[in-house]
Amino acid sequence: MTGHERIDPTERAHLLDEEGYTPPIFRYLPGPGMTDLVRRYWVPIWSMPPETSTVQRVLQYPVCLLVVSHEYAVMVGPDTGLGRQELSGEGWAVGVMLQPAAGAMLLGGPVSGLTDRRMLLEDVAGLDGAALTGGVRAAMAAAPREESSHRAALAQVEQALLAVGPVDDEGVLVNDIVAFVEDRSDVQRVGQICDAFGLGERALQRLTARRIGLSPKWLVHRRRLHEAAERLRAGVRVDLARVAADLGYADQAHFTRDFRKVTGLTPGAFAAERR
Picture 1 (cartoon, rainbow, N blue to C red):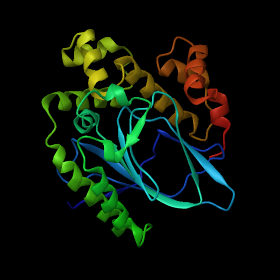
Picture 2: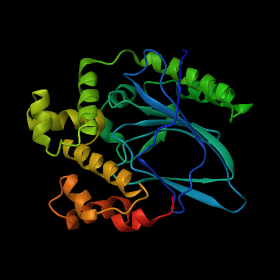
Picture 3: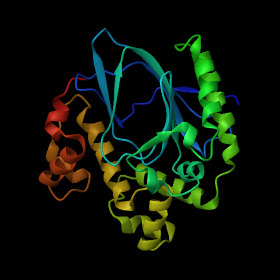
Picture 4: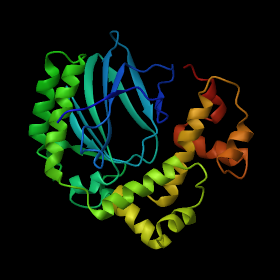
């Protein structure tokens, strides 16, 4: 496969570590014909001083991830809380942010069984995990910081994903539902999703549980937290009451409680962290 345009988005899901540090991360778009299965790729490269480490924090999107590093290879399910990954020494990883539809296709069953969990890539029913791991590591081995190595590794990923086949109609629907919630700040209630897609609430709940392992209410809640994190780290004084109102909370106290429950920090404490 070809393509893999380099992108450098402001990633609102990535909260960095408590000191505001992140290793260099190369991000790429999927190649032609892969956008129904893959959102994007990320390739972090790190080299930490001896006896030091960093814990990177992520408010994960409602999707599964594939991650092959120099040490491990896993499929990661949706994380309902705050995802954490400790990095130390020197290393690299090739990460695949899948589309919502892809998780169940790779697992051969409901994603709910992988929510808040991870599994070895070699145990994923829809992939030849061992071959994919070997191919990615071979592509990255000689020059992990070079974009040519990254693109060779991503070609290995996309070759493996071709075996999954085209996304089914239900998968297309769940991709559209998640995009609708994430792209529309005015979506504050599950009923709005039902109305937009002509689904009853029970049918929508069953669909999202099966295909992404999460509830429709969670989708709205996580979108709110992503927006909140983006605004809180903007580097300017933030009116927390205004943020709470804009995100659809009844009051600032509800917003503070929700944000702290997931991140472990109050909105004010998060805004005060180093960037």
